[in-house]
Length: 299
Ligand SMILES: NC(=[NH2+])NCCC[C@H](N)C(=O)O
Ligand SMILES: [Mn+2]
Ligand SMILES: [Mn+2]
Image (cartoon, rainbow, N blue to C red):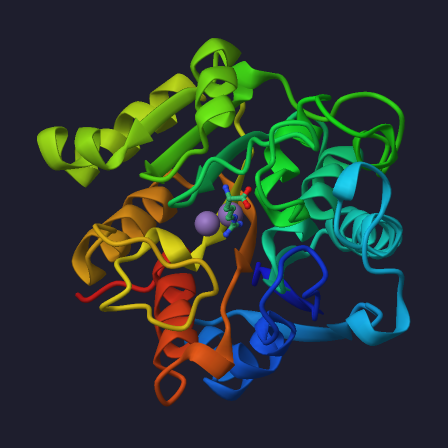
């Protein structure tokens, strides 16, 4: 039976301060995602974009200094509905961001349709700030905290009142930039975190295999891939670049090992900023990585 993939775009740039991530879905489509996946034998549907207001039409700062709180929450509710429907239809969703705040909707949607799911959060950042600890007020630095039930109720309640994840069902990979209080909360949280140091010492293959073992109680996995996990030299088109990231080869090997596990049922690709990119190469890299995650092999 051929698996069916559904692409959903979320042109969201309300969760952070720099313009341009709203163009991520266009850039990845333009880089040939659909044709590439069809070449791998998938049937591919494009579900179009979820409606997200532009910053000019919404209130800038919400309670607690949170940037565009209400508009982000409403857009994430729409993402939640679309992803839940996609998974309930038996489709494999690929959600193209947009900034990382969209993961509050995507992960809630996957879990509502498929039940408990392990999460691999692949990111230079922890995205574990709350409104109280955030230095920026940018909601894209807060989605993981809200998914475990910490933070502003409006965001915790996206897709239903209960917290969506327990810390034990989350593994972070590639972390190298944490704010001071975020760091403390993360250390106490019970989430497994592989920083760049662990990747350097153990190698990415061992790290990914340990992550899969840690999540063995969850046969179904969601990958939330923030392109800023890659080194800015290979992925310059991101809004919050941090030096010292994954190489091209490490990122591919990670995707290949995840593909081999046969457990990945959904993926977000976020934080691509075409305005800051060089001739769309970060979007092209995203297409390559998605192909590897969906089973592309060299031989
Ligand atoms: N998804 C991201 N790129 N997040 C970056 C977050 C940066 C910083 N920690 C903040 O809270 O503002
Ligand atoms: Mn992120
Ligand atoms: Mn990041």
